[in-house]
Image 1 (cartoon, rainbow, N blue to C red):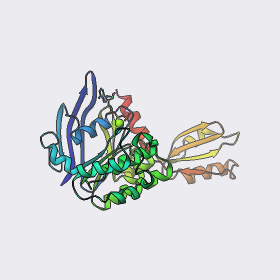
Image 2: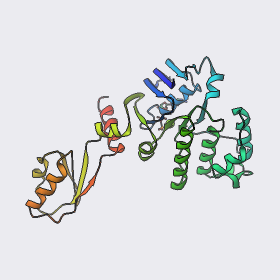
Image 3: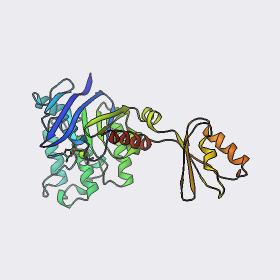
Length: 303
Ligand SMILES: Nc1ncnc2c1ncn2[C@@H]1O[C@H](COP(=O)(O)OP(=O)(O)OP(=O)(O)O)[C@@H](O)[C@H]1O
Ligand SMILES: [Mg+2]
């Protein structure tokens, strides 16, 4: 069964159309990423999917249940760490875990949760006294407390230090192994590439591309980039017509040639013929960021 199905989701706030016909299908067991520019409707989509907001139009099913007509059932299946979550300043970390454990229902080893999330030393600390990263960690921990079958994590690693980010990634992979489906909103391309089985790119309230990170890179990434320090007498026009080359740019001293397939050998060969055989070529494969920029660029051009 699909963990989440969103069909034709539409949501307005006054004159703003936040979500403009989003379709998403997330099979059980997947880590699914949602990417997109600020204000493109990611959080709104997730909030509707969870039942926190009512959609203006469209159909949402969480393991077959409608979050609007069956909120209790959906509430039991879903955990959330929403963007801009908040707790009262005076609640302690230990109390928050205790409270959320009670709401989540099933048995929760509260001490183990604190150890797992590196919050043991903060058990008696008030929420208002936590650093940004500690708050973030607490929210992710709370979202996962009841071992939900589907969890929404909205910018879960924003504000975390690099070590904590890696730790959260590891924990997300772990909960997936335990059977939880994960929907992850993120602005970090490395996070999406590393964690997600598939990602959707939402621009202006609409899904513009869906696929595996590798699939999107292949389709939209624009091939690899070869960078080298340009010799003074470099003939750029010659490089532009090399087999596989799609573009040649120069940023200061650095020349960047983009393209596919045979480009690297052809470029090396040409430079050698021209007496620049000692130039060091740095080859960078296309990344999810390249694909993302291309997808967002194409979507905003047509508007
Ligand atoms: N409660 C609200 N009232 C009015 N407008 C809202 C509200 N929440 C969101 N919006 C608007 O809806 C649009 C989509 O917002 P949303 O929060 O879904 O974007 P997002 O993709 O999550 O952005 P970000 O990457 O910045 O978190 C924006 O134009 C935003 O200003
Ligand atoms: Mg958001």
